[in-house]
Image 1 (cartoon, one colour):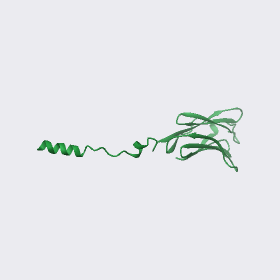
Image 2: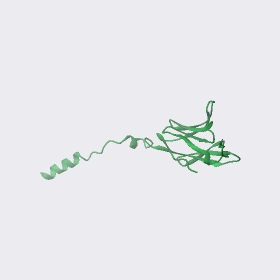
Image 3: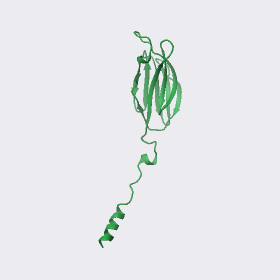
Image 4: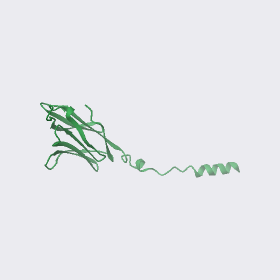
Length: 137
């Protein structure tokens, strides 16, 4: 009789829990890894690239010169790091790159002070938010 009770109790607890949303859709809850990079170019320019989940995408050049310093990657910085948007600038604040997560694409635009942003690139991505690495030289 005890054996029968143990078998019944064990059978009741053997049902696995329902799958979580992350198990149903592996991309759900996954952060998209982002890292901005800048390399010295001619004069006071730097070449900006964006590393998305380990793959580098060259975006273009920015003038990194300031009033007191010749342009170099040292004059570049993150302007914003948000789960849906990140911005990167060099030198003066008038020109910078913005990457915005829109559904399954990362849309990169060049923002020039006082003008409509210009789309530079669309990068297909899988995930729900951005994880922006600190900018390092």
